[in-house]
Length: 534
Image (cartoon, rainbow, N blue to C red; front, side, top):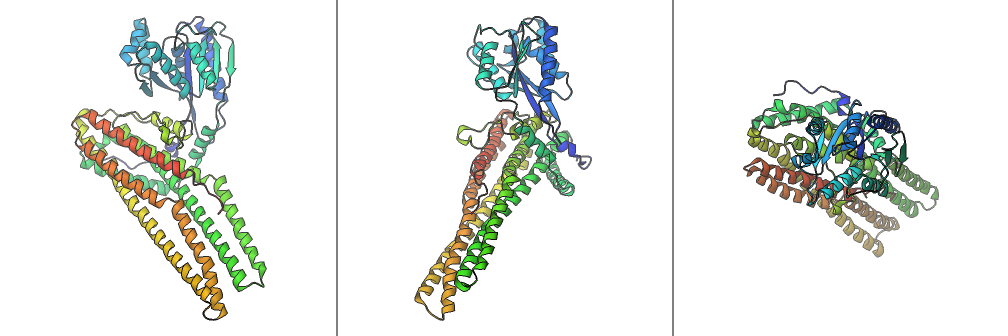
């Protein structure tokens, strides 16, 4: 059992912003003291362009393959700054890569810097070493917010050299700071697309969101008890997992609460818009049929339409729809990250497949926010002897829980779709009856007018119900959840049959990818359901 209840600390729920600084440059450098001063000045200038943040600490992250020369010179200087971090991307496997280091001192420095790393990624090996170096250089440019180049300004002498990386940065409009190695006091700034303040402001807005402390504590404790119970059932030592679970659950619960808040706000606004539009039809029909001598009543219809425009405007201004989708994305990533962390799987790369590229962009604020969260997670070394217990824990606490969730979602969405579809058919039938009774002109004139009124209003009610049903994609969501139940059940069976750690990890990665793609598919559909006047 965990020794104490979670202690509330809002700072522990804040995600730090990070400015990723990429590095390229020559391996052999002269005038290093002068270059060091230039690097310090450049790094300070980068920090000064960060917009002011209300609730978000900002740190620097240096991304580098730790090559000799320029890479390590910049890395050493940035790591002297408090709260700065190092991420390493290697062009090939570590032992193979170290063969390019000329001295034992260089290899020791590489190992020492590698020990300070937050995240390490090894790219797929290329047939030629030059191709591998070009690939890693392009990766650094693609992933950084600004590139520091220590370059003499001369053309490239080989594939993957500094000149080629500078050209690639210019072609992709990556902000570039060129420190001239032949004139260390000279620095050239090429802003390119500039440092985008949008993701930083969106993250700061997320961190500034207020969450009810009691609600947060209750949900956190509920999840704590859930995981404690399963860890005990699986005979997994929960005390070893405590730091990782606390860290991930705090972020997950907060993101989940915020996502639900904005989902409810968006749905309520959406429903009110439909109801007001229906009310406008009812008022217009009532005035024309029952009170033709009182046209002033139609002014209330104008007021209702103005109310619709106001609700839509407020929803867009407060970004209820966007926040719902973005915060839900973060919540789902935090949930998956918990189990990936327990299994020591790196999930630092977030890029949707081509067929789901409308879901989000790697430059969207949620992606660097998640990477910042992931980079600061507590490290957990899982003993392979606990493999079977870990397998049982993850299958029960994650896969089975998600199967239950999607099965309930499938039933709930299909039930809503079915009921609303039946209601539409019933109203359709009643409309036909009202029209026929009006045409037959049976009964007093007032009754005929009533049937005419119903012939106008009933189709409007049916249209409102159908619009809500189609807008919320009840049937599609039901079918999506049914497919998720099938896929996750297959993956759970495969995991439980895994006889070795590697095969289990493969199934676990596939499960995480399946859930990520399901969320991406959902985002593609829902992100275009923006609030519109009826």
